[in-house]
Length: 229
Length: 187
Image (cartoon, rainbow over all chains, first blue to last red; front, side):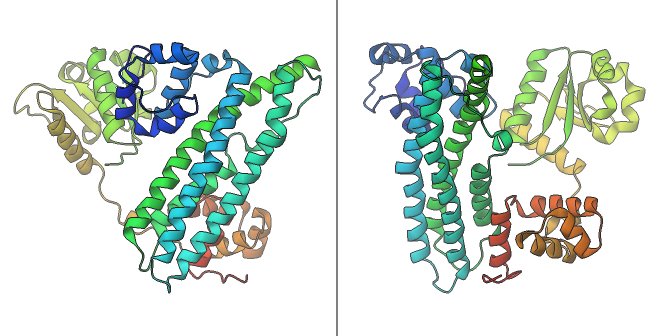
């Protein structure tokens, strides 16, 4: 779909891009949106419509990422959004893949040993992803919030080696490609498709999350730490 | 989706036309790297030889016939005229979107001759050797020493392995190697 603007009806946007439903939910907007425009819904929910539109447009358009606009938004607002994305990935998207993957393996040929290897590789990805979420939620984001609230003079150093090529995102893409390009033997095709759809949903979330986390939030934290130094 | 890996120049004084064509190429011919130019001077100043395919109107062709004739297999003339005869590929403009896509696909399939080497992207014996050492955790320099090849050759093998398999991470490569019997689970 094209670019979303404030005068569009949210119901039309959702109809065209159902993948936005979990994103919209993170702003406290539930389905049953009626025929109101985005501007009216944002006003009712006290959401900054510019910010809301930027999130929606960057989510659906891989090539659209207005870095300067994002840097003008409130950092705490960005952290809260990233926190909700992490929570959604951990509570829904990750278990969703696991659920489909387990059914897929159980209903496929038990002699196909490759499927068990896939399960093990997914476990490697899952552990690494959960560790990163734990780092964000337990250490980085609380420290960033303190910094932005000026309640801390602590200097935060961010390990920038994984900013451009995130190993978590890379592993998920590898997992997807292992299935698409290298799956062999007998298996349940329908459940295989369900796993892949769930993987693609998570991949999109992680990709969009990483852009805001690594290219907007981290540079904001670095700049502020530098000022306080 | 037809995947076209080409650097493309669209030359037209009409930006609505060039942007429209650029949009179609981006949307339906994934990975096409498309640039638009308003005039032949702009294209020449930008280094026309950097581009592998050219879309242009008949007026542009007339003014630069000598430049494009030796590049006729890489030049696509866009025209409304029916039965336009020229020693170039011709894209008819006055047709539906679906027909335009079909016509583009037909032109591209003439330009992109199927490469027999691309039909089956299997790893070579040497690439398999490199892969086994990667999954054992060896760094590039150690792999080079062990296989008596240069560091650059190791890097080339790694690049080819990732490109052929679509897998980048060491753990992904490890599971690929196990799934294909290149190493055992105990290794």
